[in-house]
Image (cartoon, rainbow, N blue to C red; front, side, top):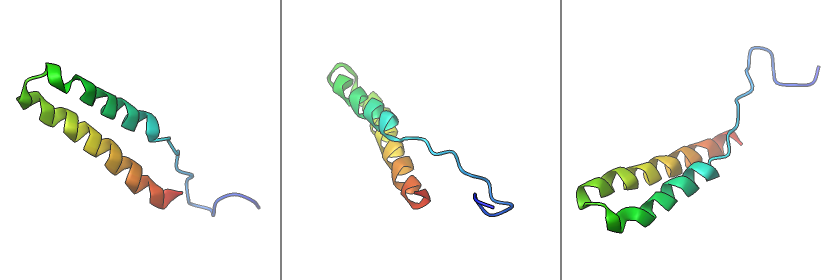
Length: 59
């Protein structure tokens, strides 16, 4: 029977590019934010890129 082996669920694949685009776009506002708030924006980019890179193994 076609399909994944019994007992294995198909993982839902989500395109990580929109999350990366949103996180990178948020960096555009850094000039308007105090430096203490920059960390959160950079962490969001790092997280989005990390998620994208870890999903490569599931392709």
